[in-house]
Length: 318
Image 1 (cartoon, rainbow, N blue to C red):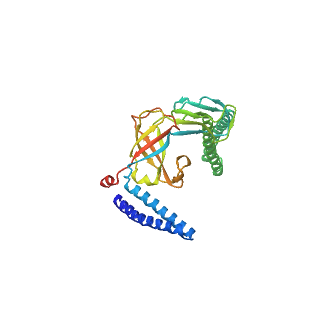
Image 2: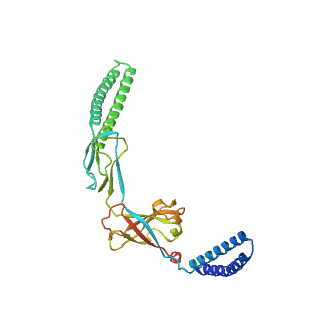
Image 3: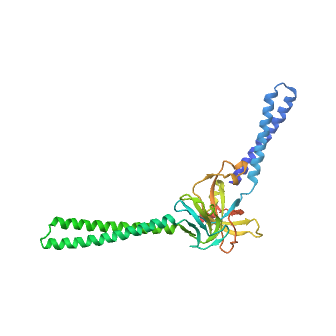
């Protein structure tokens, strides 16, 4: 491919020589004739051809690149802890930058209404149990009277239906009690993972809407770098492709490998583009640091990733 490109470049150089000769002739006529506009356009055209040929020759003679250098940021798994209901914050038990363990208290919401609902559910369950007991006794009494031919079969059927209804109300009350206990427990917000508290958007005394993010935790684990892989390098990169990661503040580069590549292309993000590549397609790519080369990095640290492209010939042999 490189030889064919070089041959095309040399053919362009032959055209360049002819164009330069036309340019010299045009300049001579331009100095002696009146057709200034047409000759000026001819001169500009021959200059454009010359620049095109020179660029093609430079690209053909340049060896193909075996790596791609990308700029990205160090990231960690981000876990957002949301408010289960709209309620007032009673206590914030964590601070930004604090390391928390899984199950550790983060935020406590006002439990007044939830406690009242729990008490009501407990009372309803007690009434349902009493009703179940009464209905069971009435059914047994009706069954004995029906055997003694004292009461009718219809009275026994009504007692049996009342017993079944009391049993259904009991199961419903038990389910409501479980739901009330769950709502009360949810007001004590704990960390789902071990990590570092990154954000605390609300303060004690504020009323948060349901679903609002109460705490953002950066989970412990291996950091990774998010970069944007240009489309032209996509064929030479696959999960497991080795990479070298340079991070500001570290004297030595870190070894890593490509973790995964997004299947959906995007337009070049504004923070990763140049004026020339603004409309190019890129693929979000995660590059993981090797397990034995993981410094304590915070999310958002700039990083430069050099990905060593795979050789198409070697991949074909595999």
